[in-house]
Length: 391
Image (tube, rainbow, N blue to C red; front, side):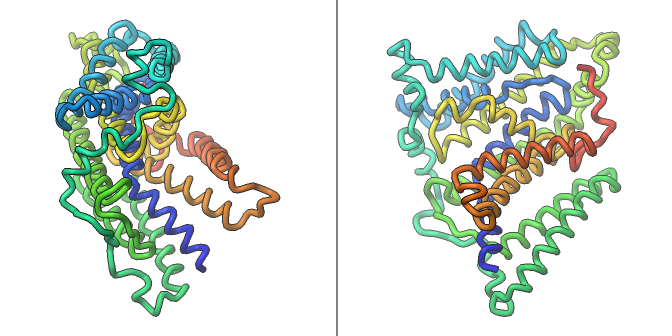
């Protein structure tokens, strides 16, 4: 039972991690590109990397925190303009090739050592250590020093922490997740988002009851980082909800399904695509800034694999859905933590060594994604009618 509890603790730590939330913000931006507009952008990591570089370099040169964030967003804005002007008339795999190539150019420029002035800015492949730019954000923390455990009332306080409490709790979590999926399929109108939010809160409280998380109030991956990043996830979700429900959001869906029909109505399809590319890129830059706050701005850690992680999360949760990016990001990272922890606990080293479990986790997630695409291409919260892409 202790092994099961340690696995559960690892999953919950990954679920509340600020970097999980940061990827969710980037996936929300990717959802605007791919889910709502039908732009096959395979370069979301470039927006994340530019936002991170703009933020970190600005802080290391003594600029205020707010200015540094604006510079990171401005870098993504300029990149979206430069990328979109010649490419947004392309469709499907042509656009995908161009965007992934542009992202690789950004990554290789970041790790380049050919110019001294560039090396002083980016530090090449070694990247910019978080200790050089994290201070102004940490100094804003109102949480103080010490540690805090979220949800002090836990399974330890019921029947002395007996095994049946954890087992019953896991069954209830599975039931709540199933209810969430059913609500996304069968409910409609304003009832559906309210039901999904209520069930999500109940699930989170129950999971924290089963695996209470203790962390630093202020520090790397502490509660200050976690709270701010997840609040930004909530704000981003609300912003996208308002955008999608607006006339502009309906134009996005129209372009996704048949841009020639939208063009025949006198709408400037190119301008709307550019707007979508910029807005989604700004979300990507914001996600990149939050992604590197507890880490390092290292170009290889934000390469094409990160874009594929974002797509995996988007397809898991459901493209063109409001809450799909957040749910998909949670499932991706929590599932990965479960596979790694379970493999380390139950698979002998002679079969699968500890240093290979991370690669094995990606194999399992890849197979699961293929099965999902085959049997439920719309994802968990998605709608099959939203997949009529004109790409």
